[in-house]
Each structure stands twice: as structure tokens, then as C-alpha cells.
Image 1 (tube, rainbow, N blue to C red):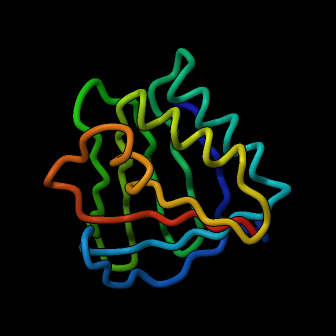
Image 2 (cartoon, one colour; image 1 turned 90 degrees about the horizontal axis):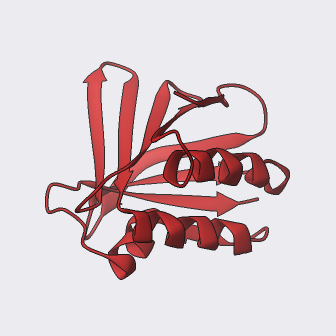
Length: 137
């Protein structure tokens, strides 16, 4: 399984999870514009390539699994241990392609809402409980 270890350095910044009116929770992830191509490439491998999953390790004990899914996209948030957070973004191919396109177009100051894009491209499962907002800085 491919992975990106962004636990340290200025590549990614997380803001505390906050309430979201539709998804339940909102996770804001800030990614440096210079690092965006690395993320897009790794996600492309997971969604379009031979790998079907990407493990993205972030600061503050956050882990996001990005997975290709055959039907019904889902965004799930779990808190399995104190201080540990795990999000799973499982997307159908049309939703994954919309996310990749949104990230490829993003410039500093732009934000990409993963669940919102996925919802425009297909169905989001009712068990989804988080929106992930990727902000380019």
C-alpha cells in the first residue's frame, strides 16, 4: 500500500475537528501548494492506478486512508484511541476523478471539499460522518 508520511514539517496542518451541519464533523487539512503535486500523484495511483489505497499520515496522530470503492462513496471518521484519529475516504471512480480534477486546478487560497465533490459525482453513503476540506496554502 502506498503511503505519504506528512507527520512533520510544513507540508500539512490540521485544525481541530469541528461540527458540520450535513456531515457531522469537519476536518480541515492545509497543504502547501508546493506539496500538492505529490498528493495528487499519490491519490491518482490509489484511484486510477494498480493500487487501490493510499495511507496519508498527518500531524497530531491523524491518519487518512484514501480508497477506491465500487459503489456508494463514503467518508468516515473514527477515534479508536485517545489522541488518535482515523478517517477513511472511500470513493467511487467518478467521485475520485472529480476530486483529482479539483485538486489539480487548486491554487493557493483555494479549498476543495471532498464530500461535496463526491456528492456531485455520485452517491454518498448515509453512514458518512465527516467532510474533509483540503485548503491549499
